[in-house]
Length: 134
Image (cartoon, one colour):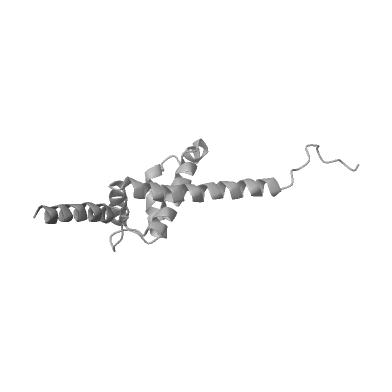
């Protein structure tokens, strides 16, 4: 009898960690797919960076940075409720949110690198004023 209990206990110990090691995935019709969420967050951070500039606020005084989410959600044909539900669900699983934000940061860094490369490839204009042929 004790050996059966011991075998049962050992088998539960071995099976339980295997069940817990399965990676949680957030999916379903109420949630934004991970790839789309990454793109939405990239756009959101780009717009947030632009709207935090003082030049923006001088030109568009009545615009609040929170107002920019609507057009981004429209671009991806998403609802505010889908966005809120998805963010809420990811906030319950910080490792999944970290994965999403690692991809967001990677895309933003690639954009920065591409911009830096474009700026380096643009020939600098001469510091000297153009000569007047007269």
